[in-house]
Amino acid sequence: MSIKNTDYYSMPSLAHPDDWKAYERNAGLFNNRHVSKSFPGSKLLRHWKWFVGVGVVASVSSAGYYFRGEIYNKMNPVVMQEASTNTGQRKYIQLSDGSEVWLSPQSTLHYPEIFNREVREVTIEGEAFFRIKENPEHAFIVHSSQVNVKAPGSSFNIQAYSNQPYTAVTSVSGSATVAVKDTQLDAEPAIIKPNQCAIYVNDYQKIVTNNYSNADAHMQARRNGHYEFWGMPVSEVIKEVQRQRPVSVTLEGNYSDAKFYGEFRAQEPIEKILKRISDGVSGKLIAEGDAWVIKVKDGK
Image (cartoon, rainbow, N blue to C red; front, side, top):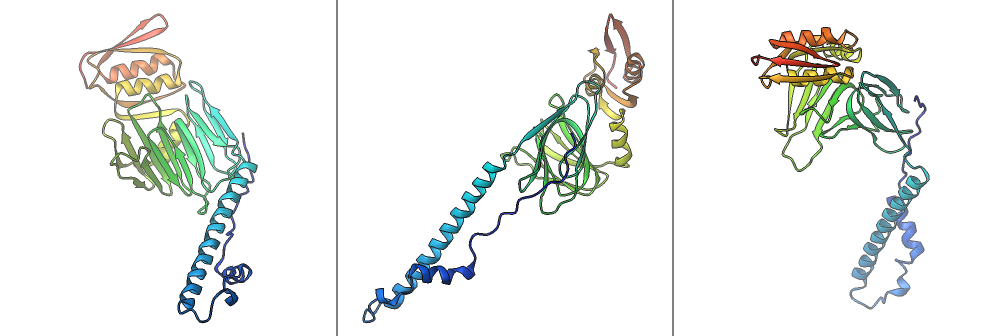
């Protein structure tokens, strides 16, 4: 899936002020034979024709620029690629500009085979870690269902699963701008720097930022299947477990306020993972064939 050596197209200008006089001479706009010397308004008329000439040049130039762009786009279509992961699967992708993507389980990345447009754009469904190749002339934008992340060259992790109530972007190096995708919402974009994260909560439709100490180490741990939680609702922790392992887990009892503080590694025995989570929320783990039930007594 590695594609290298991207060639960017630069659209030249089709109109330049230095060409105006030549154009006007060729068009005969200053040919005094067409203007009566005895007419008092001849000077005004000449000026009027000059403005018309400038307007024609601008119109022709704009049209030429537009159609040249259309021709280029048709001759160089964007060929999209897709990379997906299943439960417990991880995948590394190198994009054509040298940027790198580490795709987490149950995730999909849509990206061009070659970046041949002014802006480098990809779309993520799920979670991925991006290391963007710096190019100030061609911004890099990661689209998700709720937010867009713009970064000229930086490293960050984005969690954007459709079944979670939030989208989280954590910066490891460089800066990134996180903006709500729905422009109708009154939500200010956030600029995050290393060891900061931006979280968009679906119900509140706002972006909040927080410090995230030692983000590089924590994000590398996630890429390796080591997950840490600091007060995460147990229902969200179970979703994370099910992205790593094909297992049926049901929560019962008073679990809506139960929060888990702890960690697990994706390759640990599933019973060990679920027992640790169950104990962490004062619950009881019950095996029912190939499925599991965690009964929570009191929210924690």
